[in-house]
Amino acid sequence: MTVWEADVLPGYHQHTVELGADPDGEGDLVATLIRRGPAAPARHAVLGVHGYTDYFFNTEAADRFAARGFAYYALDLHKCGRSWRPGQTPHFTTDLARYDRELERALAIIAAETDGAQVCLTGHSAGGLILTLWLDRLAARDRTAALGVGGLVLNSPFFDLHGPSILRAAPTSAALRALARLRKTRVIRKPTEGGYGATLHRDHHGEFDYNLDWKPLGGFPVTLGWINAVRRGHARLHRGLDVGVPNLILRSDHSVTESRDDPDAMQRGDAVLDVRQIARWAGCVGNHTTVAPIPDAKHDVFLSLPAPRAVAYAELDRWLDRYLGAQFPDLSERSRQG
Image (tube, rainbow, N blue to C red; front, side, top):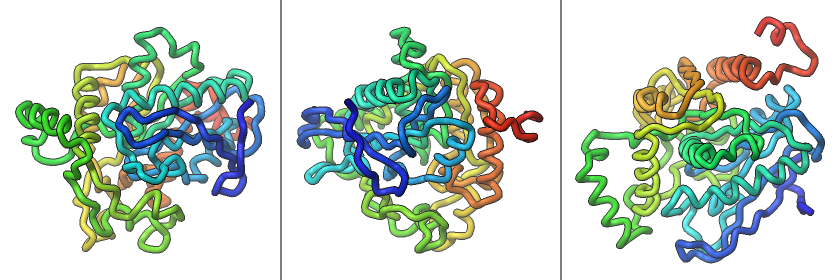
C-alpha cells in the first residue's frame, strides 16, 4: 500500500520512495512523489520532472492539466527539493541512469492509483535530458507501452552545454572525464547572485513563491561529477535517440545574457541555455517531434511573463488535443476548434 502524507503545498500529498544506499556514498537515497488532490481513476495522467536547482512547486501548471481531466503527479528526484537529506550534495549524481528506478516506481504507483491511465511525461531543463535518455532505454527494452507512457513534453531541455565551443570539444570532454573520476564533488561553478532566479521569485522581480532553500536564487554549485554525467548524456543524445512516443519541445525564441544588473532583459528570454542548441538537437529525440518556440519566454516557459506563458499553454493544449486525444472534459469551444 502506498502511504501518502500532507505535502507542503495545500491540497497536495507526498509519498517517500525509498531507494537504498547511494552509489556515490552520500547515505540512503529517497525520491518524493507528489500528487495533486485525492487518488482517482483517470484516462490520462502527468508525471512532471524538474531541472537542476529546482523542485515541484508550479501549481498553476498542475491546475492546467487537472482542468483537462489529467491526474497530476510530480517527482522530486533524489537529493532534490523534498528528497534532499542532510549530508548530501544537492542534485548530485555521477550517472543520470540512476534516476531510472525512481521514475519506474513512480509510474507503477500512478498506474495503480489511476487504473492504468496513459501518462504524459513532462521534463524541464536537466529533467528533460533525464527523461529523454530514460525513454530511449525503455524503448530499447520494449517497455514504453507496458509502463503506460503515451507522450513527452520537454520544457527548454538541457540538450547541450551553454558557452564557448571549446567547452564541448573532444579534448575538453576527455579531460573532464579524467578529473571527474578523481574529484567528483569538486565545484567548477559557484552560485551566482541574483540573475535568472531573481526574475522568478515574488520577493524579487517575479510572481512565484517557492522555497529558496530548495531553489536558491543563484543556483546550487555545479560539480565535476554531475557535469560529466550530463556530458555523457549529451553525447548519447547527439548520436540520436528514439523516445518511442510523440513529443513536444517548448523553448524560448531567443536567449539573453544572465546579469543581475539587467533583470528586465532576463524577463523576456532564456537566460540559462542557448536556444539554438535546443533547436539543433531537437531532431535527435525521435519521431513525431513538434518544436514550438515561444516568443519572449523564459528558460522555464511556464514561469514566463503572463503573455508568453499563455502562448506556451496554448501550444501545449493543441499538442495534447492532437497526440493524446486529451480534450477538455466539457468540450469547450476552444477544444472543438483545436
